[in-house]
Amino acid sequence: MNICVIKPGMFEERAKDALPPLLFAILKPLTPGDVSITFIDENIEPMPTNIKCDAAAISIDTFTARKGYALAGRLRQRGIPVVIGGIHATLCPDETGEHADAVVIGEAEDTWPDVIQDLREGTLKRRYVSKNNAALGDIEYDYSVFKGKKYNPMWIVQFSRGCRFSCDFCSIHALHGDTLRTRPPSAVENTIRQLPRKLIFFADDNLFTDPQRVNELLEAIKPLKRRWVCQISIEAAQDYELLCRLRQSGCMVVIMGFESLNADNLRQMNKSANLATDYETAIANLHRAGLMIYGTFVIGYDSDTPETAHELARFAASHNFAIANFNPLIPTPGTKLYARLEGEKRLLHGKWWLAPEYRYGDTAFQPACMTPEQLALSCREARYSFYSLRGIIRRLRGVNARGWVRIWTYIIANLISRKSIRQKQGRRLGE
Image (cartoon, rainbow, N blue to C red):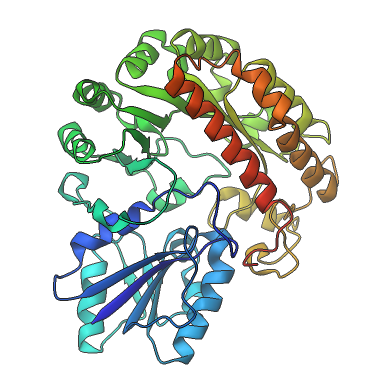
């Protein structure tokens, strides 16, 4: 039996910012040796016009759902059974079930073996529901699945799943609930030792899920002398000594959700850690510890105006953020935000991810203090101004890009972000 595992792209051509999907490395060891498995990531390679397989498994997020459903329809017309999983399938199983022979809800570790067995026996069920409790230390990863695939020079490693915060706009809590799990630091160390490239990206939504284990992790990977990037919550930046340990163990860049400078917005999005943190102190500590800052912002909450995105872009530039995202607020299904906006009848589309008129960067709801067009335009202008060539050069002087490796990392990351923004902005999903 030959199974094709597919990750659809948001658009037709190669994505400038594509990273290896960790799912591929997880599924390979879970697949019996007598089952042939082919991995296709449309973000970096063209989709074959005539996929040859006995069954197909498609992993979708909300932005790729429309394209994934269309692909599933074509395959099913040819008599190929289709299984759909991923974040969007987990959050919208009823919708997904209309386009698939089977839907996987949740994690793969305890569902994929059953899917394969039922495909063999011709008894595929309509749904496979994970218990979402796999011991992360028992998970095997096979990175050989990425051989020959042209991704950006960065490996994906996972230390934990889940987040101890429950932000209004984030789907992570909807996926994992209050469950927090970590891999043994020794297992993470062993994984990194096997990876040939030196740059690592921790896929954790918040590396500081378990502070004690994080300290053990830092000690375990420090001797490896790898350079890495991670996401952390902002309150961690109040601890200068902790940031120094991050830097000494190889961390170059921290991704941090600043989200807003407005306290009312932070309260509305349930961003309690940010309300209790002084941004200026956090930023000063990060710079002093020698870490580059990748700041993310969400624009569109009820206290935001057409000027907010521009103010945030000036804030990020003046504080020498190496990278920054200025994201229009997106109501993702399954989140508290989506339920609230739906209840207030402020959604512009029943399901924006399926609406043919929706374009990347568009606003999918009615903001309180501006028009949808003003929100979309202000976010686009903030992105363009921050990633102007002049802006990139000016920020280089103050972003802790000391040494050629860090300078090169900064330049490449900014050029990739600049190209990716222009590639996506205003595009219809799936085109």
